[in-house]
Length: 222
Image 1 (cartoon, helix red, strand yellow):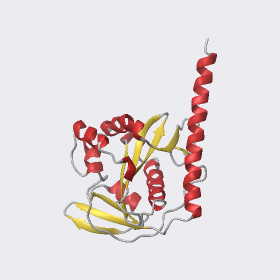
Image 2 (cartoon, helix red, strand yellow; image 1 turned 30 degrees about the vertical axis):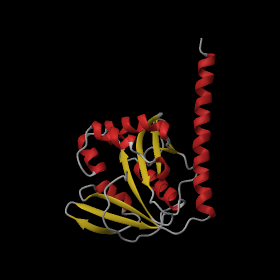
Image 3 (cartoon, rainbow, N blue to C red; image 1 turned 180 degrees about the vertical axis):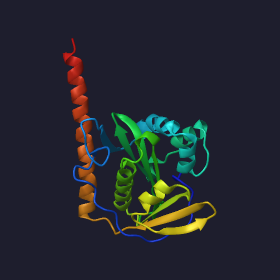
Image 4 (cartoon, rainbow, N blue to C red; image 1 turned 45 degrees about the horizontal axis):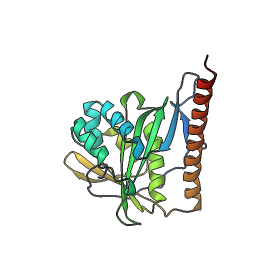
């Protein structure tokens, strides 16, 4: 199942590089002691329940913007159950250990084709660059899996998605209240693969360290 319905397309400039450190970023434009860390990592089938919980926390209007139509919990359950993990990359943003944002990259059937990106961030965590970071990582993942172009379909009123995707593209197809953006990408290279591997490695290290801290706390608790 693709993140959104398909339409038409357009060309754009290349995405910026990921921030150094790749997997962890403070919320907001400036860090403060009260800012929670956001951990980005690739999701896997075992995260299916967390993905469903995240999507179900979206209010009605946010669900409509994400899926280009109103959807209930049953539709979300079917969406999660129907994820094709062989032809998709999902990236999650965790705030205080809870999944608060997801980028879904649906890959084409053949290498060198077109991918599609769907993006969701819970309202309380919007406006903190989480969506932008997820989108950057989604573009890189698509590029490293031989997608020469990435399609973004959204409602015309979805100004936040248009602003994020618009950093790399211009408006393309427009049909009623729906529009399409397309990002054309260079072929992957050693640098792009190292960049993704570095982000994945940092995320894995972060998970191990967090688990180690939790285990130590349990063992030393009175």
